[in-house]
Structures are given as C-alpha cells and as structure tokens.
Image (cartoon, rainbow, N blue to C red):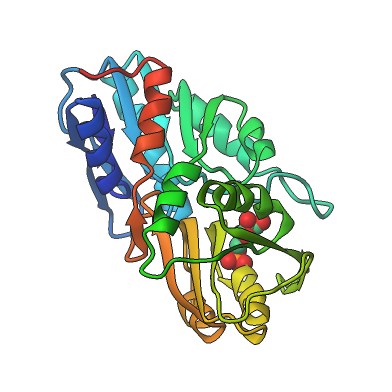
Length: 296
Ligand code: R5P
C-alpha cells in the first residue's frame, strides 16, 4: 500500500498508477499552535507500506509530518516501511564546513529510523556524503533520463547545456551527451558566511545567438544560475532556460533569474509547485521494482 501526506500528492498518484498499488492519503492538519497532526486513513493492508512525502515546503514541518506518519503506521501493524522522500532536505550541510556546525543528515536519518523507516528512496540527493550520513539503507535515484526529456521538450531546441558549477557538470555532461549538445561548465565560489556567489566560466563560452539550458539539482535562491546566466546573456545567448530537479524557488528567486536572462524555470514533481513540469516517477518505479516493489 502507498500512503502519502500533504506534500507529494501528484507523485503518489503516479507511483500508485505505475506500480498498480492502492494509495491512501493521510489525514493531516495543523493545530492552532502550529503543531502537526496526522491520522492513518485505514489500517488494513499496512503490513508493507510505501510512504511518499517530500521534505519541502517546509522542511521542518514535512519532516515531523513524516515521522508522525511512520509512527502511526508502526503502531497499526506496519512490518516494513519504505519512505520515498524525493527531495532530501538538510542534505547540503553534509559536512562540517565551519567549526561548530552539525552534519545535518545524520540526526535526520536517526529520527526516521527511530520512527520505523526501514529503507528510503530519495531523488538526486545533493551528495553521496549526505546519503551515507543518514545511516540507513537509502537509494539515491538519478533522473538524467527524465531531465533529458524535459530539456528536449522545451519550446526552443537548445544548442548548449550549461552547468552552473563544477559539481553540476557530471549531470550536465550526461544530458549534453545524450542529446548531442555542447557543454559549458562554470566555476562557482560561495562565501560560507554571506552565501554570496561569484562565478566564472571554466570552459570557453561561445553562445552568441544560441539557446542555452542550465541544469542543476536544486534551485533555491536562484543565485548560482543567475550569476552564470548573466555571463551567458552578456556573451550574446538568445534564450536561456533553467531545468532542475528540485525547484525550491525561495524568496525572489524567480525575479532574480528573470532579471538575469532566464526565460523559464522547469522543475520536477519532487517538489510540487507551479514550476513542476516533469515527473520523476519512471526512474523511481524502476528503482522500487528493483527492490521488491512489484505490481499489486
Ligand atoms: C549547490 O551545490 C547546489 O547544487 C545548487 O547549485 C545550489 O543549491 C543552488 O542554490 P541557489 O539557487 O541558492 O544558488
């Protein structure tokens, strides 16, 4: 059985259809003081359950909701709980960058484990370090195929794929190779205290009159892509798109990207919002099947 909370309704529906499993939505509400409440919709058939709940927005609320959902399942006979948390929050603090900081995925993983999660499926987690810091069995599902399809469905065919930083270059190269497009890679430095980003191209930027598509895992403030997009725009690119997996789009991200020349932002359904344009269900289903979740 698939159960889901308030944050992954589209994805849960896709998974239920593709896996042929029944899906039930947890009753959720927020108490007047801000605390979360959940209630299992039915208790039959929960022995082996797939919980689908992403961790945005907002990270803390979704995390607590997920913990409560798993506890309710365990108390009502779930013998095995697998969690699909397509956006793994707190993954960027995957190491101690400055003295005195935590390794955030570690306590998150511990809390999930304590509330009954046996294994977990995440999508394009920020890093392998974040996944291993969770300390539980976790499969990190790559979605290069779905991203490539999203790039090739843009209303203008791009000639160039751009990575806003070196870490994003592996994914960008895979998409560029798959679609036979050129690749440019930027080098990014972020001030750990202010968050300010400085960017310069680490390969030649020949984009005059071309359509360029930036690809990255996360767009949060938009600062990383905006900083590189300005360079591309000044170099004469005609159209600039941004395709990511997790479109968090916080604060003024949309305006910042637009003012830097990005005409459209495309995200997947790991975060369900108005930027959601493609589903990561095909790759998730493949991975789930590989781990014993077959059609009902
Ligand atoms: C960083 O390493 C990530 O891959 C993204 O590039 C970053 O999280 C994007 O954040 P923002 O949109 O705030 O620059």
